[in-house]
Length: 88
Image (cartoon, rainbow, N blue to C red; front, side, top):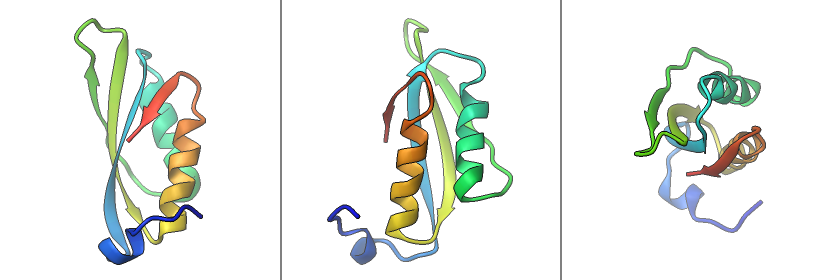
């Protein structure tokens, strides 16, 4: 587990926003939701914003997390999606 202060700064369970930035692809939001479903099943909506040139999409999703390890697992899963460049 990474050495962070999540446990001190965040009261769990908590709704945690993730922003996934990847290559422009209409399936990216579906892949983001599928990755989140593996660790936190539920109904999710995403917000998609294209970059100024349209080459990239930013997909925002809010997830109820239960621990620092849960957050780290989600970051790892989201970063592993094909075409993803950054997870914030």
